[in-house]
Image 1 (cartoon, rainbow, N blue to C red):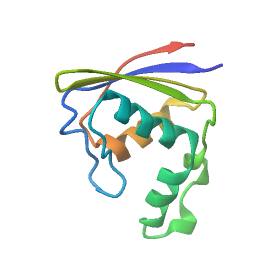
Image 2 (cartoon, rainbow, N blue to C red; image 1 turned 30 degrees about the horizontal axis):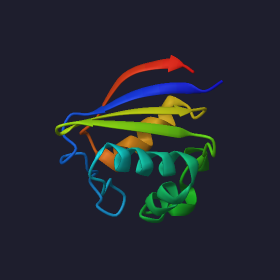
Image 3 (spheres, rainbow, N blue to C red; image 1 turned 90 degrees about the horizontal axis):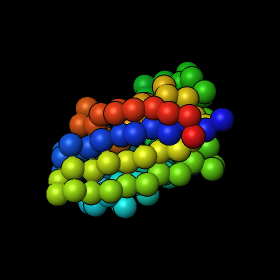
Length: 114
């Protein structure tokens, strides 16, 4: 059963991860939503992150699980971005992807069953 994750980026300009090649490059709610949706649907972000690890072959491959049916909607109000991700992925995976994309510049507001 899918879960809805209600995520907030208090300041979209700051929503960047520590590694530029992995972080959000978006400007605007729809663009942030599209980038997160891609990170949940495909393993591209995970594979880029894994390649940067000291021992890529020793990375837990369960972190690379994807949900091809994941959807993300985004709304922007001034600098504030709200994202609603609907996915069957567990919270640990959603949080890992958000840390890669936004660093510590995001908040998980709520979680509900879809």
